[in-house]
Length: 226
Image (cartoon, rainbow, N blue to C red; front, side):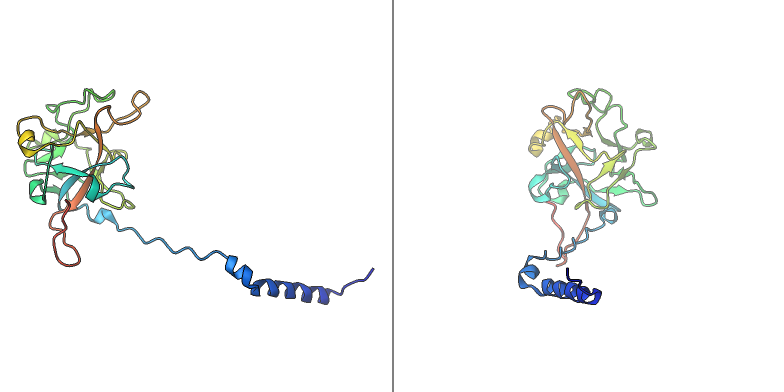
């Protein structure tokens, strides 16, 4: 039996390793480096000051599209209305000194706390849930009701409570003439559980998206949310 010297074994190992490293076929087989994901904008900075609340008919905040899913916006009173431009939508304001924030329209503070608003009778869990509204009476805005968005969203979708980022509406808004007749499209909290796993049957699951008022694009023109 022949005995190879330790130095010879080391040289052989190094030679084999060098040959493998220089092999063209191996080099081509190595995976290309994965490009870094572009950093998402910090949408929490956009949810501030004055803005419009656009309503998107979507069940996924990751796939929602402003151009294809927008069905209207919120009015000063808190209803969903049709809109062809930002002038058809209410201009809301957010609290400046706190986060999460409160939301107000020109009428007053907005919340789900007005017990004069209708409840979601179609929902298994909606008998005690009142529709969203804006009211000049501060008592109608519960002290703990606050709104926020989440850094990582591609758009500033508005959430409240414990990650309540979806909302429940009975239908999409119709023409302005029909909506003005009194059949208003209200918004409820999205509620689900073991007896109702998804959206209320026959209703739409929607997102609220904040569009800063007067937001401008890179060319200086106003951003059109519709």
